[in-house]
Image (tube, rainbow, N blue to C red; front, side, top):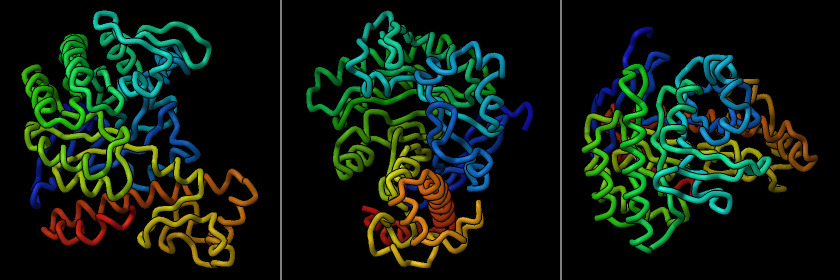
Length: 371
């Protein structure tokens, strides 16, 4: 894959659902794609080699957290995050924009300076400007870099949302300049506008005028209902450039993903598989299973009889139930790995059904299966 510039190929559509491929120097990403979240250079509780065995083609890292720990100096010694964490496939990094919302009590927004954080670790002042965000992501050696944006909390206040669009567009322009002309990497713009179609259109128009390698829908999965999220995607996703990848940030459950694919989204990330794994919740083709439930105490069946990664098919639900009740860390590790493997199975089935023209049938079968 050496010397391969970043590019996207839209192969086919079934309704609005899209089958495609993203090409990068570190490998091909089949879309629709799910990216496990490795916020701090690790997908929590799962070995890197096992992530590969699930068929995962890209993971996500986080600019803000990696800037704090291990820091740019360490990452530069390893020529980025790939060698540091022993992952040789593509990495996408969030810009730190989500932390502007999630750590709002520790930061303030300045249109010119950027996001001014008080470190949640040691209280140190950190200024994350649009330029700094791009510089950090380049030190991480990300294959897909996100612009810095202001992601507001869920609100119906159009003034707040409009201001966030103005700031985010201004920062996106500065990110594009700082990013430069590196064709081996990609820079994605991030659409804001809450649940308002007109504001989303305004944001999309501004970003497409600047021009990016891909476009993300931000400011969703922040507390709105699933139906509201699907509604705004239905109204606005097709306004995005057809020949560029479309990424819905921070989503979600298998049903969230399926519904968004149905509206033309190509890329997803979420902590759901590992966060659920740590609480004993498993995603399976039978639906969601709460392995803490006493009904699994004597269940001799594995979560997935066909999964041979770490011999997962040799561990019974009864044993997992015992581990959870004994507060053993192995429970989190096994269920988290199972969930990531299931998510990648689910994405492969989505792609197969888009290719065969049977996506609508698959969608109807599973859209309410995991709620």
